Image 1 (cartoon, rainbow, N blue to C red):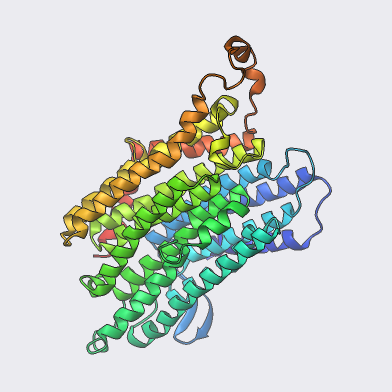
Image 2 (image 1 turned 180 degrees about the horizontal axis):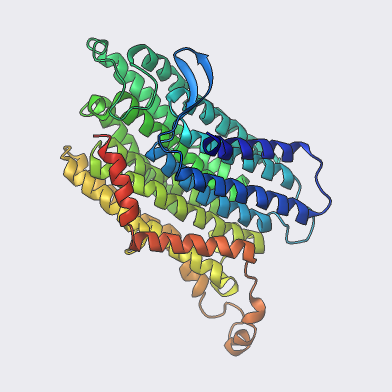
Length: 505
């Protein structure tokens, strides 16, 4: 019981205390305390991953039939592991990012770390949830406590983006809440059960109503995952949030929406109930439209963080399309992409954040020659970019392979071939908006420094370097290595995910 509760309660309480205590005059003390809290929480999660599966603990009762309780399963533990890796690396990156280049004190740094710790605990609670009511409670808390990430700078743009984030998130959450009432009425239980919980004696005659309910819930959770037409909060929130916050928003928090969809479709309604219905068809259409639209918008966008936000919109719908096919191989590809995209997108946002922190430049066309000034950062950016495009043997290739194979094997008219075509076009567009930064960064062309004075430029090469600090570079290097190594040796993760999926069909 302690192993299950500690990684949830400890960061929430310590994060709250960090918010209310007076900020220490010595910044190193703040960083030391925050770092220690992150490490303790991370270690407790790792311990829990190996000891709490199948255990259950009731926190309290809303009613006799609605307990708020925890019961981690394989899917929830996978989500918690992904959260921990991303949260730890982005957290330590923030220690250097929050230190302004001019040496002045960063306003709201303690506040940022406080909310960062609290959201960490909330996300672990989300992964450990044993029923839909508990999941929904943590889901709403996640939205409320992550909004300060967007509001961090307190500028007018940040406030408007934060309000948009809150409005979209609450609209989606209320759609999910609407469906929860009907599931309680027509289901045997709200406990997560592979294959669904619908009462077969109550479903006949109410199929159309339940399909509408399932559609509302899918759309509701898809808001957090950025599916068209409710994706606009992502490109608004990311440019104004600090880079570490953008990294966790794009790598992890959006995946909470994906996890919600998986819980609803496969653990509440059951894949068989939705398969072949208009809900599945509309879901597939919206997912493919979002894949293409997100890639096109990212290709046309010049602001770096906004470009990556549109990229997240597109890549998340790779996952949603795989889930919508309701085919085992496609679902395996979707879950693999959940893991790989989290690592890759965290790496991309941190790399871009390091560049912005060191240079102050926020647009892609301003970074000519950046590879010569920040070579390690840009090499990490390049490796994670290749992984996102899907160049073998990097990780993105593996998940996209599963997604394409699943689409072809599904046998669904039109979508079985249209899906792989759209994914391929999107991959080409992904290369088009990620790789030019590498090309112009490492190969700026003649006259980059001194037109006609290349020898003088070579002598000044090392003096021009303004590489990121170790607190930034170490997380970046780890993420770049993970993005490649996990694609070269995917079998352990694929076997774990295959076991999860086999229980859903």
